[in-house]
Image (cartoon, rainbow, N blue to C red):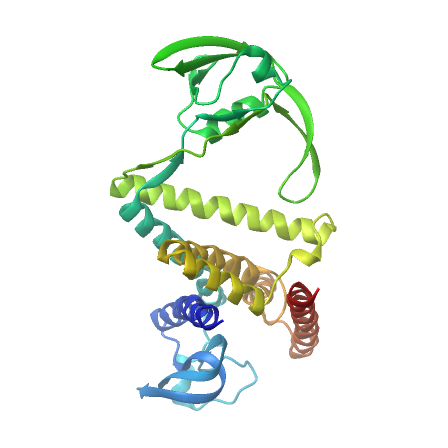
Length: 354
C-alpha cells in the first residue's frame, strides 16, 4: 500500500507539473502575468513567491493549476495590469496558452520514450514459433516449435508483429513461408484460415491465423539518437490513436464504462509497476501522460478542450462568448466531470469489494 501511494504521488506530480509548466511557459512567452503556479489544490502548504508569482505546493495532490492575470474576463484590473492580462491578449495567443498544457503532456511522453530507447534500446519480439496447435494449417504444413520465420512471400519478417500482420491480412490466400530450422532454410506453403476472435475492445472480429504462438524471445536493438526520437514519436502516436479510439467506443457504447478507472486504480497500477521495476513505472507514466493530454483536449467546459472551443468561437465571431453562455457551459461541464468522478470511484470500489 505504501509503495502504491508513494508511486501514485510521484507519477501524478510529474504529470501535473509538466501540464502546468506548459501553460506557464507559453503564458510568460506571450507576456501574460502568472499569479499562482500550484501543484495540488486546496490550502497552500509551502512555496515561494518570486515577482508576482506564488510557486506553491497545495494540500490535495490530485491536480494543479496556473492562475493568470486577467484570467477571468469579468475581473477588474489595475491599468498597469492590462498588458499582463490573459483576457486582453489576441485570441490565437490564448488558444496556444491553453493548448500548451496537454501538448506538454504529449511532449513528456515523447521524452520518456526517447530516454528509454536511448538507454535500453528497442525491444523486439523475434518471429520464433513457440507452439503449434494440433489440426491447424501450421500443424498440417509441418511447422515446428523453435522454427524461425525469416520471410513470407519473400518479404522479410524482422519481428513477430510484422509476421502476424501479414498472416492476418492475407484474406486466406496461400502464403510461402521461409523457415530457418537448425540452421537450414526451408520453404513451406501455408494457407491461413479465418477465426472469430475478440479484439482489445471486446468486439468480435474475424482474423486469419495459422495456429502458432510466439516463443516470446526478445532482443534489444540499439538505437542512435535519430532512430530513438523517431521511435518515441511513433510510440506516442500509436498510444494516442488507441486512446482516442477507446474514447469513441466508450461514447458509442461498444466499450464498457466498467473499464474506466480513477485514482484508486491508478495508484494500484502505479504500485504494481513500481514493484516490477523503474522501467515499468516510467513507461506507465508516459502512458498516463498521453491519457491526461487526450482527456484535457475533450470539448468539455472547465477542461482545456472546453476553453479551446470558446476561443475558437471567438476567433470565428470576432468577439468573446457571452458571460451567461460561459456560466451555463461551466456548470454543465462541472456536472459532467462530477458524474464521471462518481463513475470511476464506483468502478474502483467495485474492483476492490466485488
